[in-house]
Amino acid sequence: MCQRCQEKGSFYDLQVRTGGTPEPYHKALADKRKVWEAAVPILQDTLIENSEILAYLKGRGLQAKTIGKYQIGYAPEDFIEQLMAKGYTLSDLKNAGLFT
Image 1: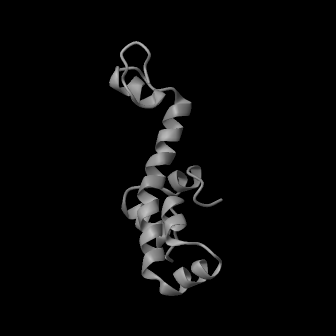
Image 2: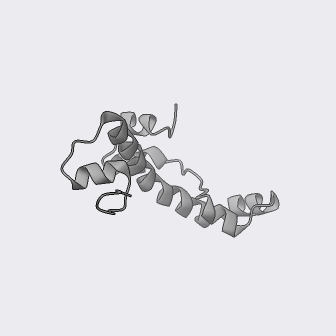
């Protein structure tokens, strides 16, 4: 939160709102976040649709509340292709840490 104007948000958000140019480090974090925000729904939907994997996780003691809280998911076979269809490159996905 800005101590002067009381505006809420991250440092990056405040820079963007005030017309400042975000520093490269903050831009890289924002880019990673965008990739993850696109990836998480795919991963979670795949998990929810797969009763065998859900049963396995519940057998390991994970509760639905925990799965939701920590956004646990499961990657489908076409996971990378789905993200690339949304406009992300292999480089974007690698930089976000989705694979090595």
